[in-house]
Length: 122
Image 1 (spheres, one colour):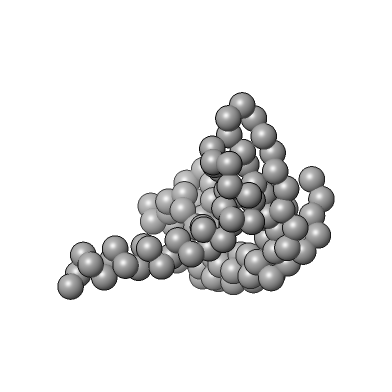
Image 2 (tube, helix red, strand yellow; image 1 turned 90 degrees about the horizontal axis):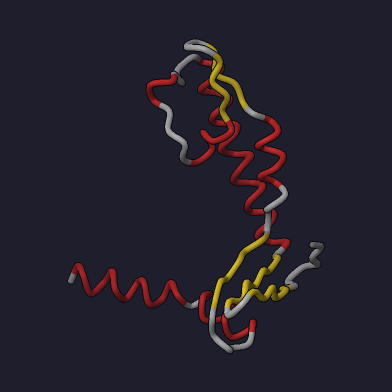
């Protein structure tokens, strides 16, 4: 599926809709964050500070390959595959709202979440 900047598309299946949107600004941010994380990961590998015992599958550790008990390296194919998702965001819904209304509601969701966090602590 090809996208231009700020474009969105509907995919319908049964009573659900998946709205997929693309943002060049978001793609740039995704790429920057991945490259920054990979730079840190490569530095840890090079220094020998990264060992199998302190690895989980979160963040950029998902790109690592374990070879026996001693060698840790990056899975460059996973890095490349992950880059194909840069700038994409999906919204799964069963409502009849327009795709613009759905994306706008999700964009404002942080305000509701912030209100809940404030009410829990004050």
